[in-house]
Structures are given as structure tokens and as C-alpha cells.
Image 1 (cartoon, helix red, strand yellow):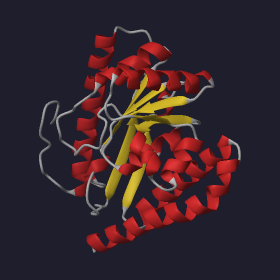
Image 2 (cartoon, helix red, strand yellow):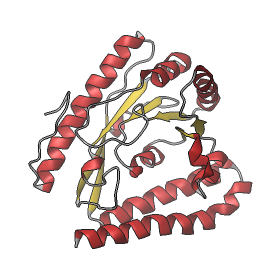
Image 3 (tube, one colour):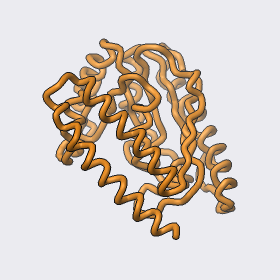
Image 4 (cartoon, one colour):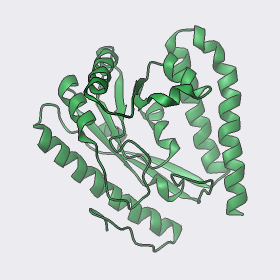
Length: 253
């Protein structure tokens, strides 16, 4: 039954993306706010499908910790839905994303129209400069900059692999607070494969880390606070699912 519901959800996921992508295609010639509204609408539809079709409830905690204006949203990345959460909780997100995603139908078109921040995988000095320049332009008009510092989806329990260069460069250049966002999403929606497990996915928005800290202190605090919150959410999620498999790795319970 779980596998059937998972396959139905995957069909819904991509079918709705194609349908809504076609409906909102007119937005490619309209002001950017129309496309942003379309992405937010899809995020809501995806959240509904997660609950109704696959039994994946979603809970967002800590909304009171979101500052006004621009800030740096730094998220843990375990599943595809992570990239849609900023569209639910922030007014105007700009996501740092892999440039190759621009070649995907609908996804790439809307990323360009909505002024996301595509970067090369190589992570060269030139890539950092371009990312920072683009982020400054977005933040200057009040947008929230979104980055996933591990760069790719991780399996719950994996040892953390934070790529500090991008986060530090943005933090220093933008002079805005960092808002860490922890999750246990991978317990229900694994990074790979089609299986989806019923359960409660939690996104926890942590208290902001203020601008202006020493970069080493900031990264140490970011990783410690993020991983501590993730550990607690994984333990909570496993209990809800009735699973006892231990979570391994540094900073793990």
C-alpha cells in the first residue's frame, strides 16, 4: 500500500508541475510577481498532495523568528520539498541553485523569470563573486536569499558537510542575519527513489544569528545549532513512525 501511494504521489508531483507550469506559462511575459505567485501556489498544492496522497503531514515551527526585510535563509536539504518551503514562509525568496537546473522544462524557465541565483558546481572564485553580486542585487530590493550549504540532498544521519565559502561570502557581503532552518524531511521523503513514508515532516525555523559576527564563530554557531535541532527532529520523527533505527554520525543521537 505504501508503495502504491508513493507512486501515485510521484505521478501527482510531476503531473501537477506540468499542468500548473502550462497554466502559468503566460507569466513569462508578465511581471515577476505573477510567477512568484504561481510558484507559491504550486508549493501549496504540493503540500496538499503530500498529506492527502502519501500521508506526509508537514509542520512549520518558529515563524516568529523570521526577521523583516532581507536575510539569509540557510536550510538543511534532505528532499525536493525543501526548496519550496521558502516560498511558503518568506515573502520574496531568491534561491541559490545549480545552473544546470535551468535546462529543465518549467523549472528552468520559472527560475530565470523569478530571478533566482544560478551558480556553477565548480565553486571557483569567479562563481563566488557572481553569486555575491547577484545576491546583493536581490537583497537590495528586500528579497530573502536562500542557500543550502551542503549543496545537495543528504540522508538523515549522514555526517554534516557544510561548504562554508558560499555562506561566509554572502554573510559578509550582505551584512544581514542568518536564519537556520532544520528539518527531518528525509525520514518521509528520501533523497533518492520513489518510496514515501507516512509521518510528520517538521521544518523548524531557528532564532536568527545576527549580522557582523566573526566568520569562524558564525559557522561554528550555525552548524552547532542546526545539527542539534536536526538531531532532535530526527529522534521525534522516528518515534512518530515507530522506527528505532539509530541515527549515526557526528552530532547525532
